[in-house]
Image (cartoon, rainbow, N blue to C red; front, top):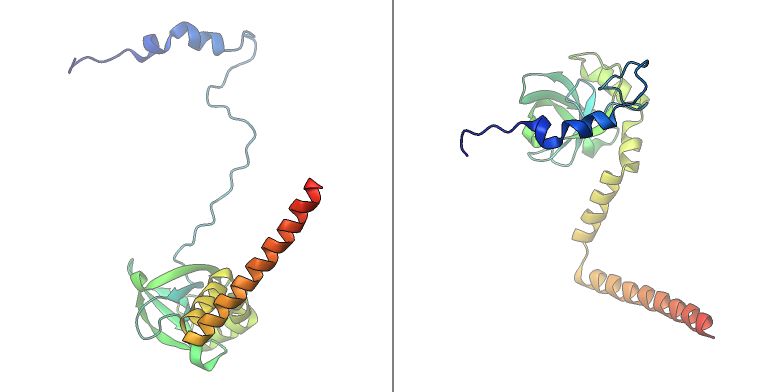
Length: 181
């Protein structure tokens, strides 16, 4: 059995293969023809100049910066001239292992652009506003707010959730009673 090679055409049945072919011999048959399918490029987040990254670790963790230049396959030069003072990231080399690529880009950002042009394009493209509206930023804000709750605030959240659940159950019971009657 070890050196035995199977004949794939005979196992599949050559007659079955021929039966699938169209009987009209006047038309050429293209075995690789496919249906009319629109092939679209995937929404890849590529490491490119102008791509925004979220810094995950280090002194600037949680802040947004733009890739200004690619140093090598592991490091990029970033600059984050945010409009808010506490969110500014100075120009420095960042390992890609410490960054999360986002879907946002700054189009037409020239390679190795200084902080001035980056700041102008950042403001022109309204990066801070777009980032604040993104699901990732909202989820991060929610988790930070939850993390900073006091014991009494957590208790109030628990009570409010119980009240909301009770109201939903009460309205569901009314609907159920109306359908039975």
